[in-house]
Image 1 (cartoon, rainbow, N blue to C red):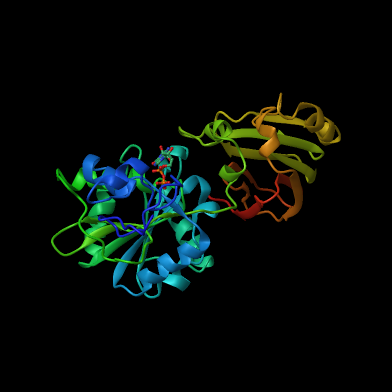
Image 2: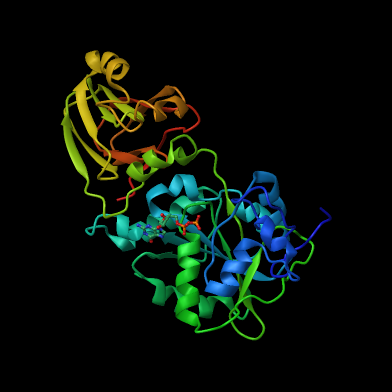
Length: 366
Ligand code: GDP
C-alpha cells in the first residue's frame, strides 16, 4: 500500500496496530478522505480516544512542541504519581509553560487535604526537574475541579495553543472528552493538522478561531504494573472508587502481601501502623515473616491473588529491595498498585515487587 495520510491529523495511516497512531480498519481505506480511527471518532462522535507511542516517537513529539509557542497541560494520575509524571518533559519542550493537572482525585480519601496535596505535587514535580506554573486537582470522571481548571487555563494560555500531554491511562481522553462536551455543541470538531507530515498523530480541537487544544498520543511508561498483568487483574488493581485506607499494626518480623503481586516485610523497628492505600478490591494478607516464603510458594494464584493461576505466568518474578526509614511520614510506593504509609524511627523494610516495577520511597503524599 502506498503511504496514505490521515485527512484529520496528518498521521501515516496503518491497519495493523489498534493502539498506535494512524490505525484505521482496512475497510475504510476505500473512502476518498481517509481518516485514522481517532479522528473518525472525534469527527462523528465528538469523542477522543487515546493511542500510545514509544519512547523514540515521544522524543520526536515533544520536540515538535518545543518549536511552537504553546502552553502545555501535563495530566498525571494522582494514584500513580511516580508512574505518570514525565520527568524528561521540560528538557524537551523548552520554554513553554507547564500546568500540572492531577486527575482521578476522586480516588483519594475524602479527608485528603487538597492544599497540602497541591503543594506536595508542586514540590515533587520540582524535585523531578519539572517546574510548573500551577497545579490543579480534578476528577474527569465526576467533573470535580474541571470548571475552575478551564477558567484558569483560559487566563494562563494567553491565546496560545494548549497541548495535552500524559502517559497512557492517566485519563487524558476522559478529560478531553469532558472539555469537548463542556465547550461545544459543535458538529465537526477537527480541522486540518498543524503538523502535516510530522506523522505523530496530534489531534487539534478548535478553542476559538485561531487556537486549538491539541491532544498528543499517550506515552507508554514501561515501569507501570499495567504492562505485567492481565486485563482481568488490572481491573482488580485499578481502583474505581474512593480508596479506604487499610491500617495494620505490625510488629517486626511480620509481612503483608498485596494479592500475590507485591509484598512488604517489616524487618526491624518498634510496633508501627502501616497504612495501606490500594484498590479496595485487592486482598491484603498479613503473616509472619518466617512463614512468608512458604505462603507465597504454596498460595500465589490462590489465596494470594491476583494474579490467578493462569495470569501468574505473565507476572515477572518478585525481586526485593531494602529500605531504611528515618522517622518522617514516608510512603513505600509500588508503582501502579498503591502505597504503604509509615512513620516511626529506625525502621527497616524489604519491599518485593515484580521485576521491572521498581519500588520507591517518598515523603508521604497524604
Ligand atoms: P488515557 O489513556 O490517558 O486516555 O486514559 P482514559 O481516559 O482512557 O482513562 C483510563 C482509565 O482511567 C479508564 O478506566 C477511565 O475510566 C479511568 N479514569 C479516567 N479519569 C478518571 C477519573 O477522574 N477518576 C477515576 N476514578 N477514573 C478515571
